[in-house]
Image (cartoon, rainbow, N blue to C red; front, side):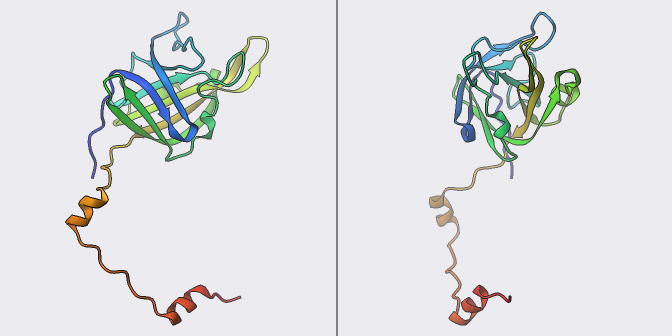
Length: 189
């Protein structure tokens, strides 16, 4: 059973429990060179507000810095996310939508997968993007991007123990005889 995704039209915070990230979200447009703008603060996450809102149909894009001139930034540990990890976008109104990580990929900036990141999809999805790969000391920029792909968690939450106990009685646990238990714990060789 599923529930509809919650569209967070006013994203204000991004929470990634596995990474202990709880960061403010700022609105971003395009930079002068036509690329997505980046947050001015190392600890902020930027939402590309010309794309879908988080929870809306399509790929909502959030970007953040990998590091700063003085150390790690908001997305420093983004490469540690694994499939199934949760990412929560919270709106200023208090509404939130949880996303589940599907996969991640690193791509050079010259071969950035524009269609996979921004192209049409038929469900609410999320993209988290930061810098990655080697650092070019002449240009003072990273040569690659790390992209994390996620989809909205629209599964219904499990019923609470108090309501499920009233709805259906719990059958007694099966009895295990000592001979069966002993056989189950022994193995050949």
